[in-house]
Amino acid sequence: MGKLRLVPLLALTLALGCHNGNAPAIVDAGPDLPPPVMLEAACTDTIASIYADPGALPAEKGAIIRCAPDQTFTASELQAKLAADDFTARPVTSGAHTYRILYRTERGDTANTAGYSSALVMLPDLPRAPKLPVVVASHGSRGQAAADAPSLFDPIDSGVNIDFERQVYSLAGYGYAVIAPDLAGYANYGAANNPPSGYAFAADVAKSTLDGARALRKLIPSRLEDQVVLVGHSQGGHTALSALAMSASYGAGGTIAAVVVYAPLWLNEASWGAIFIAPGLYPTMGSEAVNAVTIWYHYTHSEILDGPGHGVDVFAAAKQAQVKAWVDSAGWDDNNWASLRALGADASEIFDPTFQQAVGSPAANGADCPADANQALCQKWLARYAADRPHITGAAAQVPITVLWGEKDTTIPYDRITCAIDRLKQDGVPLTVCVDPTGDHSGVIDHRADYAADFIASKTLGTPAPTPCALDETAIKDPKGMPATCNMLPPNN
Image 1 (cartoon, rainbow, N blue to C red):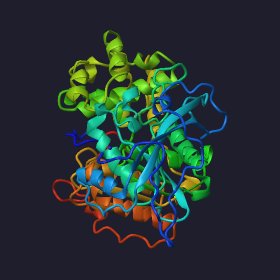
Image 2 (cartoon, one colour; image 1 turned 120 degrees about the vertical axis):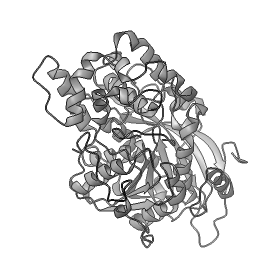
Image 3 (cartoon, one colour; image 1 turned 180 degrees about the vertical axis):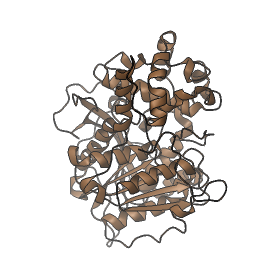
């Protein structure tokens, strides 16, 4: 997410001289350096076809449906792009050739419906080792419509494309083979049996992520070790942690060896229902991100879990057509949020009154649903909120996790990142927290991408651990300088 003004109750939550063409530029690695990572699969499709009807889907999860050659960057070109984004971490050393692919996955509905995800793939010409871990990079918040697919870099999401670039380009520039899934629902948007990507829908986003690891392995099998590393920023932090939690039951296309999350949106998802206790505090003029995410969360879950056309069910009858049109077209900060504001002054004017009454208080207070006419509706949504922040258990709870957060972050502020850290500690994971004293929600990637890359190497390639950050979670303070505590509205359960 970009730099936003956030309210206390709810927290939110990418060319210079590029070479075009099918053949990647080959870099002479020299006698003592690993050779460039080269594609080992057919790749002759057009970029446009990646986002079109996939035809009959293969049975195997992670199977490559289509592959299209894309741009090639030298190391200096990648560094120039990053420097233009205020990148101050250690300079990158590798260029990369890029591809766009479409692969088979599965959706988060109860029927485990077959699906497909587009993705950006970056292969380094100066890899960090002869064999590399699979690195899956998860994008932060953006719109949920066709043009919002991160791999498109559409100007509709200019405010957050930069964050995607920082994360993915730096990983490839530091010598890793990276796949960055768009997630199922973006490619061939709106087609039958292809609901939109579920915003912060743990099962839906986790499957696309884990199958992304399988897909990368099919592209370059001889250059990959068994290890898988999950990386994510903001909403992508939620995606990465959801994938970790689901890895034992769904499989990961390898062994998850490490997780790196920048300012993760690892919060109680009941936050998006809790807004209804006081919607006037969050007007669409001033609290744009909160309202946008509240709409995306409820609309996309309804489309996936309740069926096609049901995305509008929780919205006011008079606003349903307008809400659908907005979801189908809006980007992040689209038209400076003018189209969002046109939906209403706040959530009370956008959502169905019965739905607001059913979920508002129980979501905010963590109470049981009252035994009234709205009980079933309340229970359905409270169960969905709870399922979207699963506990990390079993072997997954032994995977090292590092959380990177900037003290200037007003998108996931001190009292919300503390909730995320507390929950991870509750699950007993091996946790490292790195606090950047000058980074904000986006800038923490600029400042700490090298630390993240070195942490990954230490957990997968046997290199020494990076020098610990000067500040850890004890540096997270409230405005009075006291140790931060989790904002318990809604409860951190």
